[in-house]
Image 1 (cartoon, one colour):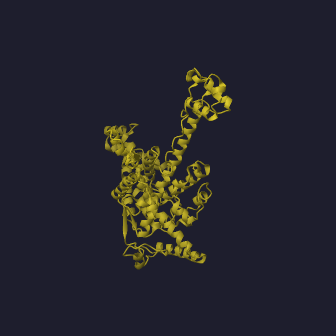
Image 2 (tube, helix red, strand yellow):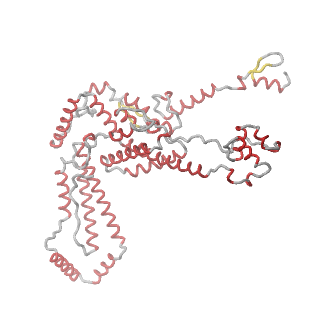
Image 3 (cartoon, helix red, strand yellow):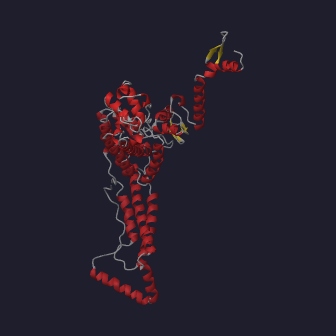
Length: 516
């Protein structure tokens, strides 16, 4: 992943003392802690520097973890070398031990005259100096479209998507806004190799992009936790796009037929194909074939127990059961891959929105303006790297425009970006401006929150952000619908012997009293 590796951290020469190795590991842990703190306190003025710093911190944390594991193994002392060295030291005098070690050091350097040991302090100082030298370099590989981690490059996924069966043909900008709606793709098209290839490509790209821009994130742990939750949703049939289908009619759902009244095959055949099929299905027998074949098959059951019939007359269910199990397993596998993609999209929501805005800006300019803009962006990036500590003046914390500068304050207020909306159904997520707020009601996060409440995300719940209000409105809608249902006791009319029309309840009361 790294195009320029940070300065390598120390590796010690031959160490013949277990206790000395303990000391070195402890010292290295302390040096790593100090380096981590200094790296975190270093001032980052550009997006590039922030990503580079995150990757250096990740490198140091991994090194710290490895050193800690080595130290724990040394303290565990499985081979007993630490205890043996302590016993030797307790039996010998200090001077004898000193001269013995001095002799070993001299012998080592006689055999390796050109080898030198660099102190740990020097190694870590070189690492911090290397940080300043690598500021203007790209530690991570990004495409030009990605802008060093600012935007997504979904072109490969888009090309695979538009070639799928059962999906509408959309442009790239529409795809960026809707590629998380996997639940809208018909289920019968999700078992194709093309769809699986598309999911794998989309997942791999989003996962790799996440690792590149957020290396300190515990990505695998977050995804694993999310998948466990979604597995339970899949089992109960509430996972988006994978609701449980109604079970097919059972093989024993036909109407039984009493054969005691029939004396020949011809009499049974006179009932017709459909009636014989229904009778065979009720017994779990094969129901195909001509009229005579069905009648013969059914005649064999007269006066016999079904368990005594030959096995070749019954429907083979093992194969169907196996195929059903395989389909369920395949459905679960595809659904869990979709769940991973949903989680990754949620993590990259800000980068996704920035990508949509960037594509909109590019489409609004001509080809010449785009080329000039790209050149300006490159020059601005170079200027930002050269200017140490210079920060864009933005006291009101306004969003940046296409030129990387804060938008005018009047435009900020015109679009209502100074107003913040909170949606409790989305997990208290905040949205700036009425446009973003209205748009989120049709997005996956809000729909998922409504589904968790057991409420359909219909137009009745537009602009409802409180869980309590949504539940009350849903209960009111259900009550209103129940009132509209036909009530036989009050609405069904009866006429008595004298021609008076009353409802069913009154009619039955009068009838019980003998007044009719």
